[in-house]
Length: 403
Image (cartoon, rainbow, N blue to C red; front, side, top):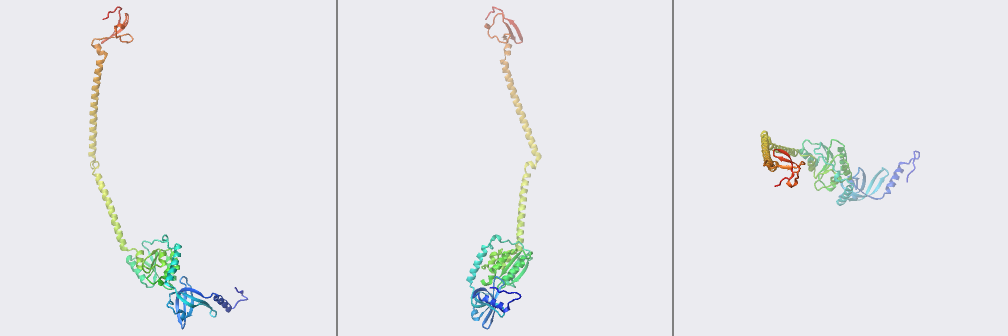
């Protein structure tokens, strides 16, 4: 229920604190999960801070030594605390009074990670098509790693051994504990905002499940998914699989493997260039040799080797064809002439003129009709007698004797 106040009718501090204490007291006992930091013991009382791993928030927890006499109560441990919310009116401070402390078991952590993995996968953060390819030769590489860590040395030494001119921008952060998520995310945002950075490597060495938990944190996973720059995950060893591996653009099994995948080996590239150059040279020389052989073959053909001789040969063929044609035509004309003479002789032999030459005459009527029999004639008929040397007109006398 609200309290009516005004500048003329304010409430005293004690009343405000009493009301806040009353509201908090009505919460009752609750179970709270978090990560332990800043554990201090004063006599039989233990003071610690319980931090939310996914947010920059924490709460003070107070309890008796008997409650916290538990191997799980160490800095960085994930625990579940049964506590009563308390508000100290005199100091105006809030805290939790611990009643029971339980460690979050490995099995429970794995189950929560699996549930988070399914959630992120359903959102599409692990899809292969959203992953970006790495540049062949990055101009500058962002490296997020622990301070003075073996992972940093492995990445730098292997990368520079492969390509001595490679450049790194290094952000050293906490890679385990309560501050790891916040520092890694902040370093990622800083490197991602730098246009000179072509790829970012997030790396650390191996460790227990609890040590690697920050790299399965939802905040970090979503930060990597939203990065503009390709991100390479190189966390732990081959068997380690934090959720960061699934959302990163490329997973490397170790820090050394990350250096090999991000930076090309200059010796291998030089050898590859030489091999490609040699293959190109062999291909070109082979093509030139084939074309030279073809050209030599073409040039060796008679038409090109001695073009005048070919012309002369064709000229001889033309002359021979002309002579054959001439001979064939002459023979054909001679045969035709012989046939003509023979036909003319036959015509002459069969001609009436030839008969007349032998002493015969042709008797015709004036109309040209040939008289074939004496019986056809009558006295007084006019006839035309054709002789070899001319024609004679005659008249038939009546009483002509017949032979």
